[in-house]
Structure formats: C-alpha cells, structure tokens
Image (tube, rainbow, N blue to C red; front, side):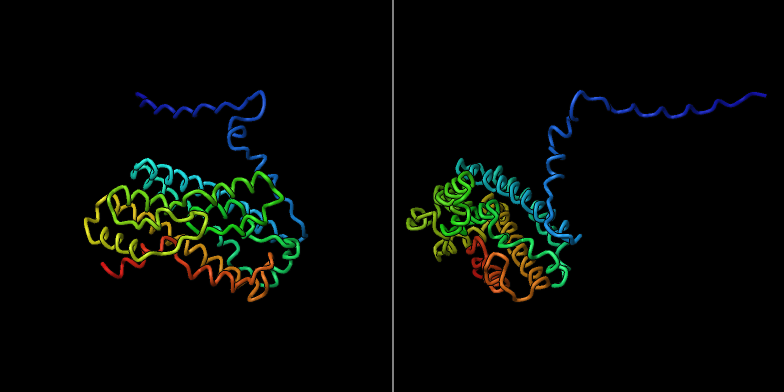
Length: 281
C-alpha cells in the first residue's frame, strides 16, 4: 500500500538578531528609555500619570506639526506648492492625532482633576513654548507670550526668532503676490511680529480663486490650509470642553480666566479670509 507524501511543514521564520553589544538600534534611534522615564508625578493620585503622559504626547505632536508648517513655509518661499501642500496634508493627520489626545482627559470630573491639580502649581498649557511656535506660525503673534520664557535663554531666543519671522499665512500671501494677485502693499510690508488682521482685499483674492478652477494648485493650497484651520478650531474647542468638564468656570492653573479665556480663543478662525470668502463664491 503506497503512502501519500505528507506536505512539508512550513519552516519557522528565522529568529531576529537578538544579541547587541550595547543598546539596541531601536533604542539608539527612538530613545524610548529616555521617553518612558520622563514621568515624575507629584501626587499619589493614579490619574495624574494619565494627565502627565497625555500632555507630553501633545508636546511631541506640537513638535512635528511645527516641523511640517516650517517645511511648508520654506517651500512656499521657493514657490514649491506641491511640497508645501504635502507638508500641510501630513500635518492634518498629525492634528487629528493631536486632537485625539483630549480623549483620555475629556471625561475628567472636577473631583478627579482636583485630586492632583495642586501638583501643577502655576503650570499651564499656554506656557508651552512649542505650542506658542505653532500659534506664531498661524499668525497669532504677541510679544507678551515671550515673557514666561525669559528664564530659559535658548527657548526664549527660538520664540523671539519665530515672532519676527513671517507666519505660514504671510508666506502664502507673498506667493499670491508673486503670482500676480492683488495683495495690498500694506499687508506685504506689515510688521510680521504682530497678530495678522483680516483684509477685504485678501478676501477678494480668495473669492476669485475659489470661483475659478477647483483643481488649480492655488485652490488646492487654499483647501489644505482650510483643513488645517478647521482642525486648529476643533483643538481649541476640545480644549474648552475638557476644561469645562474638569474645572467649570474656576480660574485657570496659570492665572488665566480659564474657560472664559478659552471661549474667546475658540471664537477665532485662523486664515480668516479663507472662511469669509466662501460667502461670496
């Protein structure tokens, strides 16, 4: 009686390289050991660890978003719209991840937050230097926001440099001017260290662009900027809602008006003419 041949057993995958002279290449590149030992809680409440790690994750997302927007601004200075749009689109995905960071904190009750709030002292998110660089790139400039960082010379110097550099939107408007659109001289020559204020002439330029070919690269640039602006607005509103749930109308940890201050921020749109122009198309 013949025996049918049995199928050969699938060979086991080769064992990955496990023996390294020092730290692993992964550790050398990611610095995971550094990242996972940066958490030093100041209370006995187990919820503080979630708050601390979530805040640190937000700082990392701020860092990569600043990188993307600076990449986009540099590309716009060189009239390279495809590179700028690609960076803006990546930042949209990163903003979505940043905004999702509110979820672990969004259900905090006042009692839960109060259990470790005193550990924050006068610490507040508006003191974040990297978040401030994000705001400066969006055109939300204010020299007073450098004051909290006077005691950290490197950070202060980086923020001062960012304050006096054109914002992402300034670079967009300069590109439009080079393309022959009617950007007022007053806008092009404005003091870029001041907060950007909307202009009816800029609104008319965007109205013209949006009334034309939707596949035009400038129209696509406008849509990429609008995606960014929408998610910035959502970030501000998610921050507002999380703060309302956790502390109501109490004074903020950094001495701000808390919810009232966040409400004022949430009412503002970045790249304002991109929104108002839509009413005229």
